[in-house]
Image 1 (tube, protein in one colour):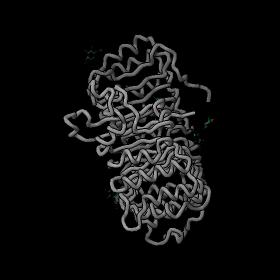
Image 2 (cartoon, protein in one colour; image 1 turned 90 degrees about the vertical axis):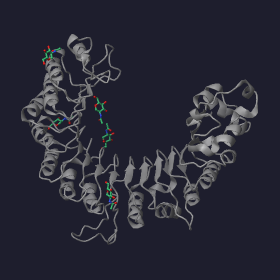
Image 3 (tube, protein in one colour; image 1 turned 180 degrees about the horizontal axis):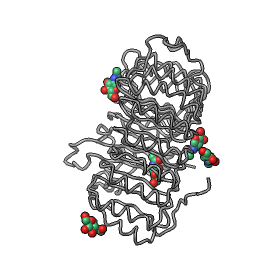
Image 4 (cartoon, protein in one colour; image 1 turned 30 degrees about the horizontal axis):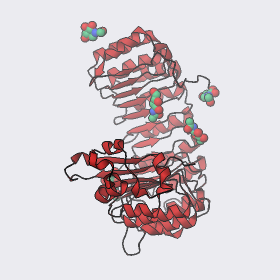
Length: 510
Ligand SMILES: *[C@@H]1O[C@H](CO)[C@@H](O)[C@H](O)[C@H]1NC(C)=O
Ligand SMILES: *[C@@H]1O[C@H](CO)[C@@H](O)[C@H](O)[C@H]1NC(C)=O
Ligand SMILES: *[C@@H]1O[C@H](CO)[C@@H](O)[C@H](O)[C@H]1NC(C)=O
Ligand SMILES: *[C@@H]1O[C@H](CO)[C@@H](O)[C@H](O)[C@H]1NC(C)=O
Ligand SMILES: *[C@@H]1O[C@H](CO)[C@@H](O)[C@H](O)[C@H]1NC(C)=O
C-alpha cells in the first residue's frame, strides 16, 4: 500500500519568462500520481491544471498535450529556482537528483526514509546541494547506524565546513540511540558545522548515555549554537556522572568548555526527575547565554525545582539573564512554585515569560502569583489548569497590584466561575498592555459577564482576544452575545462558545 507520498517543491525566483506569479510556488504531486511512479519515470509525470494554476503557471492549449507540462520540463526549466524540497521515501531515487540537478536547495525535509536505496537517494541530493543547504530535517525516519553514518558523511567533507544552520530529527529512530554514542561521522558533522545554530532531536528514542554524549560533543565542538532541543526522549539520569565539586569546572566537561552562545534549551518530556534537576545545575553554568529553559512534562516535583533555585538566582543576574522558564506539568505543588516565585522576586531582571500550567497548585498559590504579576517585565503567564477555583481568583483579584505589565495570560481550566470573570474585568482595567486572555473552561455564568462588559467599555486598551470557549453556559446567552459588539480590526475581541455542544468537553473530574 502506498502511503501519503508527496513531493513538494518551493520555487523562488522572479524572472520566469514573464510570469512573475511563479515567485513563490508550490508543486505538489498527489499520491495517485506517485503510484504511477512505480511503473514509469517521474519526469514523465504530467502536471495537472490545478497544480499549474496554483503555481501561477497558466497552461495554454498547446501545452496540454505536449512535453511542456511534464515534471521533467518544469524541473529542467525552473529547477534552479527551487529552494525548499519536501520528499517522501519513494521519491528518494536517483532520477530525482537527475531532475533537480540544477537546483540550489536551501531547505530539505525528508520523510519516512527507512531503507538503503532511499538513503542513497537522500545522499545524492545532499551532495548535490551541499553548498547551498541551510536546513535539513528528517521526520518519521528509521536509520541504521550505517545509513546514519552515510548521511552524515555526505555533508561532512574534511576540507570545507558545511553551511547547515538547522538540523532536525523528529519522531525517528537512530539505531545506536540506546548505546553510548552515535557514529563517528555524526561527530564530524557536528564539529565541522561552524554555522550550525539549532539542533532538534525530538522523539528520536535516544537514551541517557547518548544524550550525555551529544552534550559532551557539543561542549567540545565550540559551535555557535543558539538552540538545542532534546525532547520526548527518556534520558533520565543522563547527567549522573557530572562532577559536582564547587567552584571547579567538571572534569568530565573539562575546563573552559562551554556552550557560550546557547540561548534556548528545550528538554521537554525527557522523564527528568529531582536528581536530574540537581545535576542540571552543574551543566547550566556552562551555558552563560541561556535565556530560555523549557523543562515541561518532566516529573521534577518540588524537590527538583528547589534544587534548581540556586541556578536561577545566579541566572537571573548574569549579563543575559534567563527570561523564559517553562515548568508546565512538572508535578509541582504550591510549595515548590511559591519558593520559585519568591526567588525570582529579589532579582534585578525579572522573568519575561513563565508557565506553571498543569500543576496541581490549588488556590493557595494565588497570593504569591498576585505579587509576581506586579514584577516589572512579566509579559506572559500560563496558569492553565492549576486548580485555582473561585477562592484562588478572589485572592488574585484582592492582592493584584495596581499596575500589571502582563501582555498575555492563559487561565483556562481553573473552575473559577464568576470569580474568574471578575478577575478578568479587573485585569483589563489594570493591565494596559494586555493583548490576549485565555479563560476557557472556567464555568463562567452569563450574569458574571456584566463586569467584563463594563470593563471592555471603559477601557481603551490593546486587548485583541478574550477567549471564553468551553464556558458552556455562555452559549445562547444574551449577556455573552452583547460582548460581541467589541471589535478590533473588524474582528470581535471576545470568543464565546457556539451554540453547539463543545467537541472536546472539559472533564470536570480530577
Ligand atoms: C548571547 O545572546 C545574544 C542574544 O540573546 C547574542 O546577541 C549574543 O551574541 C550571545 N553571546 C554569545 C557569546 O554568543
Ligand atoms: C505530563 O508529564 C508526564 C511525564 O511526567 C507525561 O507522561 C504526561 O503525558 C504529561 N501530560 C500531558 C498532558 O502532556
Ligand atoms: C491537589 O492538591 C491538593 C492539596 O494541595 C490535594 O488535596 C488534591 O487531591 C490534589 N489534586 C490532585 C488531582 O492531585
Ligand atoms: C491556553 O488556553 C486555551 C484555552 O482557552 C488552550 O486551548 C491553549 O492550549 C492554552 N495555551 C497554552 C500555551 O497552554
Ligand atoms: C459605555 O460607557 C459610556 C460612558 O463612558 C456609557 O455612556 C455607555 O452607555 C456605555 N455603553 C454600554 C454599552 O454600556
